[in-house]
Structure formats: C-alpha cells, structure tokens
Amino acid sequence: MFAEIQEKLIELSDENVAISGYRFFKEPVEIRGVSAHTVQKLTRTYFKKLDQMTKAQVFELCEELMKTNYQEEFLVACEFSCRVHKKFVQSDFDIFEKWVKKYINNWAKCDTFCNHTIGIIIEKFPDLIPRVKQWVKSENRWVRRAAAVSFIIPARCGLFIDDVFEIADFMLLDTDDMVRKGYGWALKSAGVADAKRVYDFVTARVAKMPRIAYRYAIEKLPPEMRAAAMKL
Image (cartoon, rainbow, N blue to C red; front, top):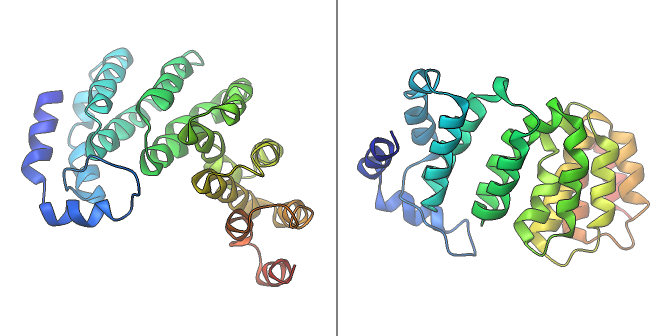
C-alpha cells in the first residue's frame, strides 16, 4: 500500500502548490505539492483497507510514510494513526513518542500529529501526561512545542488545564518563538473553556511572558478581558 499511496501523491503533485507551501516554513522542508484537502480526500479512500489491517500493520505503514520526510506522506500517516484510535492502548505511546522525537521536524508535522494522535491518547490515558510533560526539557524545539500543542484539543474541552499552566510556566522564558507560540496556543485553547483562569494566569505573568506568547494566549478571550489584558 505504501508504494501505491506514494505513486498517487506524485501523480497529484503540483509545482505551484509546492512553491506556495514553502513560504510557510523557515526551515528546509520536503513538499510534493499536494493540498491538504486533496491529501485528506485521498486518505479516506484507503480507510476500508485499513479496517482490514491489524493495528501493528497500520503503525508499520505510518512509519514507512513518515520516513520519507515528505509533508504529504506525513499527513497521510497522521490520518491513518487516528483511524485506529479506538484500538489505542497505553503502551502505544512508546511508538508515538518515538515518532515525535524522530520524524517531526517542522511546526506542521508537530501540530498535525500532536493535536490529534497524541491528544487522543492522553485523553484516553491521562497517566501518560507526566511523560508528555518531560518533553519540555528536550533540546529539540519541536519536542518542546509538542509538549504544549498535544493539549490543545483536550484543553478546549476544559480538560488538563492545570497541566497546560504547568507546561506554560516551565517554558515561559523559552527563547524559541515556535515554542512560545506553541504554549501560547495551548493557553488560548484553555481560555475557550475557562477564560477567567487563563486571564488571571497570563496577566500575573505579563511582565516576563514574551509578548508573542501573551498575544496568542489572550486571542480568544472575551472582548472585555482581551482589551484589559492588552492594556497591561
């Protein structure tokens, strides 16, 4: 199936789409030139075949796709891993953590995989949260960003907000803008569920929180809270 998927992605590639995609990245990336919508549409055509595979076979296919380093193949792998989320067991995190550390090398891969696959497994098995928190100590900027963005979807539903605060505190003065944006985004999502707590958290740290993280964090607060925060 791997060779078939790759062949179809090559057939669908468009140089203009690739050129447009490069402008979103400062680091070198491998892009074939297939829009995210088209990749997702292609991916769905394989779901019936995936349903006939074991979870281990799906994960093996995902890793083959990730190894190519292409954005499009990575997006397919993310969709495939999510397809089998009902079969996730806690030990699957060992595989996912390896993928985070080995194959994620830009913000798009980080956010796509961690928002969904990692977010799903920590929501299903909260005992894994301490392991995600350990990522804040990594020398790899994308692993540190992953520690924050993995909580974005659960936090939007009011889950793990204390953990988001803890991660943000640890990375508060991180010098990397991609990490700052990551924890700012996690705070913004937490603010959807509990605006007052997020407002209190960020305004108490306004003197030292990098402005880029601060602006991200308050973006979705109610207008009166956001206006008050902007005056500080």
